Length: 414
Ligand code: HEC
Ligand code: HEC
Ligand code: HEC
Ligand code: HEC
Ligand code: HEC
Ligand code: HEC
Ligand code: HEC
Image (cartoon, rainbow, N blue to C red):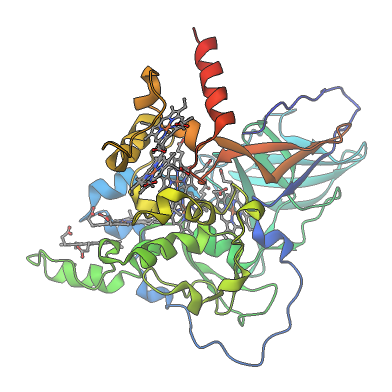
């Protein structure tokens, strides 16, 4: 999370919070208009009509749906409403001052939330919050529809600061005119239908044909045919017309996650055409991936960091060795440690640090410590050094510093 943030809240003094945030990621620096390519893409995204939507799974997979609804994946994009907008709209807590004259406030009018620009106290531009992006674990960014184009709103909510700040990548000026890329949506939703050609920027989207959240059909493929078949054939006990990742090879399994957890990748085919089970290299330039550990960031490249670990190199490990797709297991250290012990309980494989009783319940704080991100940083006015957000490192290793920290924390606890 954001460490050591202090700032003075004095009236009349404005604070610049400049966020150079890769978190809100890859896409932000990818804003240059592109020339349309001459060659048409070979692959086109599946039609919206081939998707069934998450609600339709409920009838036959109720337990999975109920549990899945609590995951960050499901919650990572939503149609905005009072329940899922995280930041406060209470007077005094609902604003960000760009300067003495310029302020943006978040306000509610007739059940709709707006971000409004005020100049010397007079309302100028106001746009509604139509879509939330981010589960809110670390933060949330907001989008609005502008004639089929999706634009990012000036203020982003940062959870650990519990405040509205200038959206990442924005310079210290107010703009309502920043369009969002499809790649941003591809990582944060299941389906948006682009109405433009592959390299057009900005792209126009259908405002209707949307599946919010990284949901079922992202990992199981479009499922309309599956639903239709099983609705018609309730006696059939074997799943038909559906992708089951349990049958994937190791590479297929990893690439399904790497689509969004493999750092910055340049696409060669339209966003939303990759399906779970496909080869990533048919859709992205793989030489655009960062493969040097020193250049990887804890944010956004779990795949790269994991792949550099001995665990990964010397076993058949996938992301699913530790993560389960349908549950929210955030913070369940003991459960994660159990998954380490699935491989590390036998002699010769076990931990060689002895005599610490917590060791069996917590393998991760010493071997996968939280680490400050070089990409997610907050710079406060008056500070020269930006403050980083910390994230779990997926480079599993023996780490003296982390071990020392663990032992000190333990001693302090008594
Ligand atoms: C009308 C009932 C019905 C609906 C609706 C339904 N399924 Fe299924 N599904 C089944 C049956 C029956 C099976 C086979 C038994 C099982 O694995 O539960 C199955 C199996 C599956 C499997 C495992 C496939 C395998 O090879 O074992 C997946 C994945 C799946 N469904 C995903 C979905 C998704 C995603 C949705 C919503 C878009 C959905 N299902 C909606 C009936 C349904
Ligand atoms: C379509 C893009 C996409 C795919 C595919 C994807 N993820 Fe994610 N994942 C995300 C995004 C976006 C978040 C951040 C969600 C948020 O907090 O808003 C996330 C968050 C997570 C988290 C953190 C959950 C938490 O509670 O903080 C885990 C763990 C995770 N993903 C694992 C996986 C695994 C394992 C796979 C492959 C089976 C996978 N993801 C596939 C986009 C994706
Ligand atoms: C390559 C995939 C990818 C792209 C592109 C991407 N993100 Fe993300 N984003 C992620 C993943 C994965 C996470 C969470 C895990 C992490 O930080 O490594 C995340 C985290 C976030 C979070 C924090 C969620 C939370 O509550 O913790 C926000 C907000 C966010 N992204 C917004 C955006 C926006 C807005 C865009 C486009 C302008 C964007 N992202 C582009 C993959 C992506
Ligand atoms: C991030 C990827 C991901 C998402 C999102 C996802 N699943 Fe799965 N699902 C998997 C994986 C991976 C497996 C295989 C698990 C295994 O290896 O045993 C699976 C297995 C299944 C199965 C087979 C039975 C089982 O439990 O193993 C069903 C049914 C299923 N998923 C339904 C759903 C439904 C319904 C949703 C949405 C509510 C959903 N899945 C969302 C990745 C995902
Ligand atoms: C799928 C099996 C598997 C899982 C799960 C697994 N590991 Fe490993 N790990 C291995 C293998 C295999 C090695 C290499 C052993 C050897 O050197 O022969 C290894 C090596 C290590 C090493 C030594 C690294 C080095 O650079 O010397 C550490 C530390 C470690 N694992 C910790 C963990 C922790 C902590 C977890 C859980 C977060 C975990 N492992 C999960 C298979 C696994
Ligand atoms: C050896 C076990 C292990 C493997 C394999 C693994 N993870 Fe994790 N992952 C963890 C642990 C432990 C955490 C921290 C969970 C917590 O504290 O809530 C974590 C956290 C995460 C987070 C949230 C990071 C944060 O700080 O918010 C994401 C995203 C994630 N994993 C994605 C992946 C992806 C994608 C893969 C495959 C490329 C993967 N993980 C493979 C153990 C693993
Ligand atoms: C207090 C920090 C700490 C905790 C907690 C911890 N480890 Fe370790 N682990 C270490 C250190 C330090 C080493 C290297 C010790 C040495 O130099 O012999 C190590 C070594 C290892 C090794 C390499 C062993 C070898 O043969 O080279 C593995 C595997 C391992 N740990 C796994 C685990 C697992 C699994 C857990 C949870 C059950 C765990 N560790 C918990 C600090 C820790």
